[in-house]
Length: 275
Image (cartoon, rainbow, N blue to C red; front, top):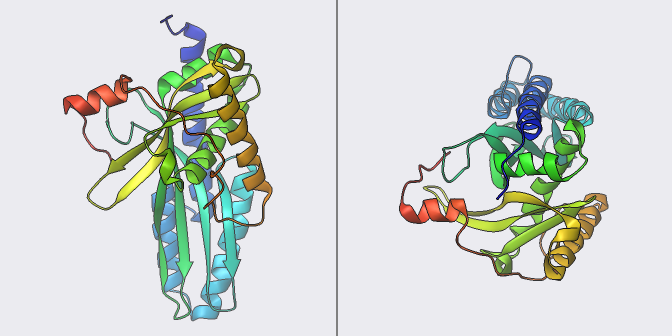
């Protein structure tokens, strides 16, 4: 395997700083004074609960949605759905943050994509928190993205977000659990697996992006699946239906190798579970 060039290392360092900046911008837009999405959602919940009645709380939720839309235009998040009534409402957002691998909690920082939800009940109570872990793009994958494509920092942020959508949709397909997943975009393909994990709270699946390869250097099966998933993601994003169930039914199932770094580390028992 060829070494990671200096230019790619610099690119990843710049992208990591940019993603941290975007999280700060998005969190502060949602709940002024906060720096992370977790802090922002907790602060929003407290704000909703302290509102003078459910009607006022619904107005605050609407205002929060408008701020999130501004954050989305700045590349800080993606609002997957929002609905509101006079006394209730809810929204779901996809966000990206700098983190260690969710199963290893070690090594270089990568980028973690999550889904968060917020629910305002008719009695004025608010509930907010993480809904799902969607994708992890490793440091190695980010470096290879720079080396093997023409993306810049801003385009790389869009690829990260798209990988989150891939994870969001594919995790609803049980037949793809533990299988290889590929997402093709431009002249490259993000490749990894739909990794399954269990923690003290639940079982979950996420798109574990291991590396990025030139699109014209992969097998036909890998390329065809990557293009099919790319088309599926596009169709999901332009659809008015936020329910991802069934979207991946026609995506081919590809076997995956078990000798990647994460799988080997998990088998060795050296991993430290992240939150």
